[in-house]
Amino acid sequence: MVDQALVEGVFITSQSNKEKERGEMIIELIEKGLQKERDNRNKKRESHYPSDISACKRQLYYKWTDEPVSNPVTAGGMLKMKMGTAIHDIVPNLLELAGLESVPEIAVKKSTSYLKYPISGRIDNLFIIPGTDSLGVIEVKTSYGAGVKALQKTGKPRESDANQLLTYLWLEPTLAKGILIYIGRDNGYRTEFEVDRDNDKVGCIIVNKLKDLERRVFLRSALQGYTDDQLPDREYSVAIKNGEIKDKYQKDKVVYKSMWNCEYCSYESICWKEIVEKSKGKMFYGEREVGPWKR
Ligand code: SF4
Image 1 (tube, rainbow, N blue to C red):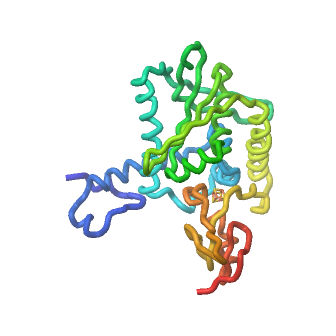
Image 2 (cartoon, rainbow, N blue to C red; image 1 turned 45 degrees about the horizontal axis):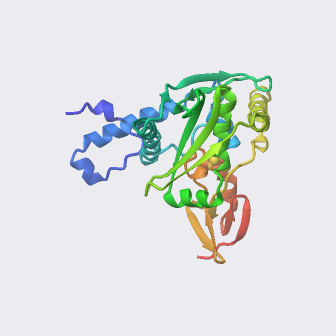
Image 3 (cartoon, helix red, strand yellow; image 1 turned 90 degrees about the vertical axis):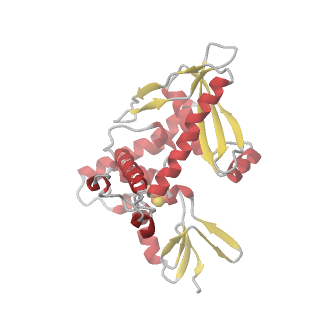
């Protein structure tokens, strides 16, 4: 019998009442574990992470200012993220089997005169570039297979993903190059891109995103009366219909689809509150009104 105290506070359960009646306690414990992981993710910030380079500035602002989350990640959402991480972890094993020489992950921390806080994190999936004694880094991203195919057609990786890899190259000067691999979670479709060092670009992002973020966070704590007008701009869009955020809707033969970045964001409701209120009887895409709403 599982101790009831262990399963108290389960954040969002996917179980139906019938399943609960059947006593499926292991699923409840899985969700308890996911809740603990989620809580660890919400630790107070004391440094920037390499992935912040490609994150929404407004979302980072909410994190740094300890804004209470309005949309906690659900158990299902956490599991989906972990599936992506699992694929990320499988790739080095396969590469090692194929004879690529891997190198243990490294901790990185770098300060710059632009920032009060350092950028720190860990870089894994390191390998010796065949035929050389130089190090390379692989970043694995997962998506729907259709999204992977679309990227392959454009011949370019998603800019936010490339920026994250550029940040690794900036953080660790001994890395000679980065490889970005996309894998379709639903069909295993895959494609890859090479990313070359571009420290000037990383410098620009640091100034435009992280330095500006630190300035806003500082003003918020130093100035009474700092208002939401000074929030960073939203970087992504959602489809809003008559006071509700939708996955997607169609208007005048155009499909408006919420971006996954917002759908997975723990601050979605608070971020879009004012537009959602304004949208009663109307349809919006992001901050843009696209027309009246008709039932
Ligand atoms: S909901 Fe979207 S725009 Fe708003 S903070 Fe989150 S990611 Fe950024």
